[in-house]
Length: 162
Image 1: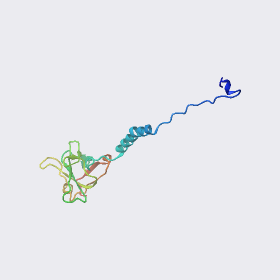
Image 2 (image 1 turned 135 degrees about the horizontal axis):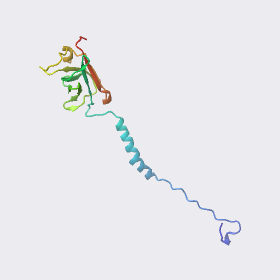
Image 3 (image 1 turned 120 degrees about the horizontal axis):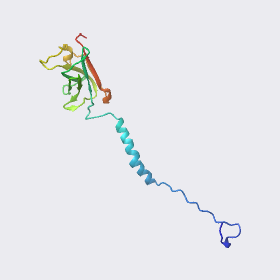
Image 4 (image 1 turned 180 degrees about the vertical axis):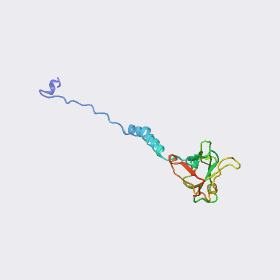
């Protein structure tokens, strides 16, 4: 109520309520640009497949008659390879593991491949049957996927004819 006699009896001054502050559009756009957009980009980058120049990490083991093969080289070639297509290769370590690389870069392109295993000439070790030593006759194959977590292979070789 007002104490001013000019207002008259029973007259009161309206209360002016403070308006709630409105968040301005530039602030919202800044928050979206600085926080939300980078978060979305980071999440998308985390779920996309790894890509190193078209190469995907590939590794695996080689077993001969159930035992790890501890030497040699794995070579893979695309099923539909052209003359100028590259092979991917990986040396077999003492634990029987190999990691493929293509032209010195880690990984191999996505696709379906025939795989062969070659032992060093004159090295002591098992005598691998001829089909495993040639890309034309090998029964071994690998299917390289865009995500490296799916590219862990076991190449099983036996001395029995397949």
